Structures are given as structure tokens and as C-alpha cells.
View 1 (cartoon, rainbow, N blue to C red):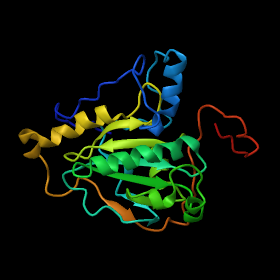
View 2: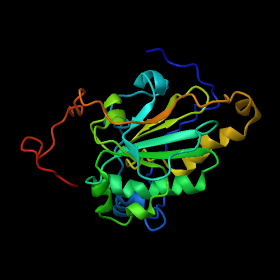
View 3: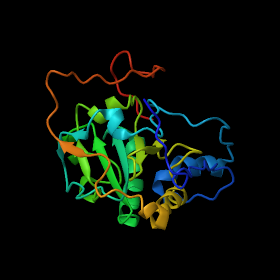
View 4: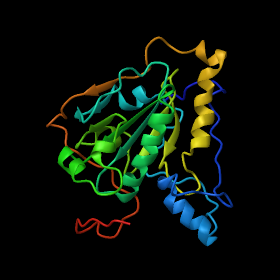
Length: 249
């Protein structure tokens, strides 16, 4: 698949290390793992970012998917328009503790950057599981657009085997600028990092390039019953995987 010619104004994804940085898990509860590591003085491993999915960075999301982003149905109000905005899409499940912690981050971004960013989460568990979800963020607290897709079509198309997984899509070409686990220690999608990316939308050179329609679409439709839900297999087997039990960390 052909890589896109993306303006250098958008390619500003500097990786920030958390070593020695002050972190506040009260104001930023999604950084609880990072906070504990920094408090204990444990060094952050000096290694490349881990990715529990196929990499689609700098690729056009519509080309990767072969069409729109499909969901089964919307749980709350869907996005009105994607035009001229970055789009952050996260796939997750209610049984996943890091996913539930990540919801606070998505809500924070949704409220702070609503003029520059559309935040969308796609849950692979159903609405009944959402109603019973444990943790500080309840279904009623979720204001960012939320959809369910029990056949995890978007996640499967990206080869996601570990969640939460998110992609940040820019508004000119529909290319993925950032991908990964938003709360991964040492590679968090921090407020500072995202703010620098979104600030490009205020630059005249970028404004002039914004198309009149969004470079990709969202579509709510039932899954094809003839296409089985085949979750990509992890290259690393986790405890409990053979007998089907769930292991929560």
C-alpha cells in the first residue's frame, strides 16, 4: 500500500520519555501505571514503542479498511461531522482494566479539544456489558461518541490483538499519524503531545489545505453474518489463553 505524501506540518510526533517527569494520577487517572513507576524510581525500559496491532502509520485509513469505519450501532450521539478535524478512534472492551482507565483520557480530550478533535470509541462488548461496567467511569459518564461492534470489524481490519488500541487520523489525507496504546508507559498519548499536533489546525498553510469533506466516513450497519468474527492471534500467548479463561492485570 502506497504511503501518503503528508505535510511536514503534521509530522511532529516526538516521543517523550516519562523518566524523571512529575505525574499526577489524581488529575490524570489514566497515568496510574506511569505514576507508580516514577514514584518507585523504576527506570522506564529504553526500547521501541510496542504495538499490539499491525502498523498503519502514515497510511490512508479508508484505503486500509477498503471503505468506511463500520460499527454496529451508536450507544450515544454519533459525530455530526468529521470535516476539518483530527479523529481519534480507540477500540476497547469492558472486561479490560487498562481500557476502562483509558476512558477518562478520552473524555478529557473530548471536552478540551472538541473544536479540533473528534474522539470516538468502539467497544467490542455489548450494551449490557457497558451498563454493568466496573470502574470510576460509568456508561452515563461517557459523553464522547461511543459505538459497539461485537464483531470488532475495525479492530480486526487493523490486526489489533491487544487493547486498548487507538489511531489518530489527520483531516487532510485521512492518514494515521499516531497509533498504539494511549497509556503505554513511556509512549503515552499525552495532553502536551496531542496539543502540539492539533495546534497545526490554526496555521494558515494547513487551513488552506483542508478539504470540504472528510477524507473518510463512518457507517452504522449490522455485521455480515457470513463473515465470522476472527480476532487476530497474538504472536505471544498469554496465561489462560489455551483454556479460554480471562486474565486481568
